[in-house]
Image (cartoon, rainbow over all chains, first blue to last red; front, side, top):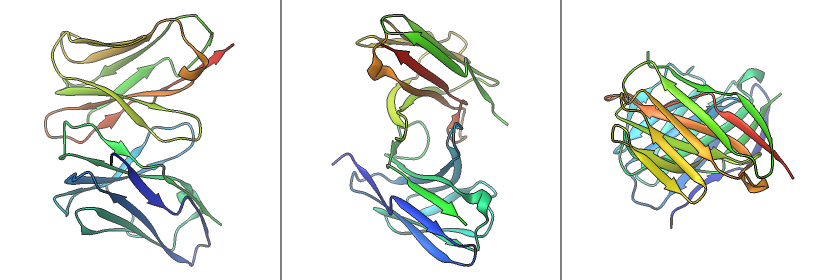
Length: 113
Length: 110
């Protein structure tokens, strides 16, 4: 299984809502990533989990809270988002952090009203 | 911090024409990766180059890594409509995370 799955595919939320994005991989990868991608822009790294521990947090606002319950799962908890947070949120995984190809999930298209 | 520049931003070709996108890093890279993102899709890994001067081919696609490991190119011979998408280069430098170039959007007219 060489797939990264993400749910939901689409999410519309108000600025006062709390929601979660989910990501799963069954490739035995030990590094997992959250990226944010705006239209016509490259993916922008948010968080890196390495061996289930948060290893990189790219100065992301605290309204985004990652969680790695186990080596296959990665969540992104969202709270009090702003309209400018509307974007495609991509999860990716790789065999190990650094120097390995990344497998991306299909993404969650998030709209904040 | 590390910067990866990519040109052109956009290219529109007729089917059958060749296409090249170029990537330049401000620092020496330990490796460079190329990804393709179809419209409405997600990035898909194409290839990784590690060695100085390395050249790899995948059917009509040719990837090169510069001798100084600071630049790379992707060349597509005889484009097809299925080549449409945005091509991103992404580089690692030392222990840094992957830095993506801004991408080149390729449009192919039949």
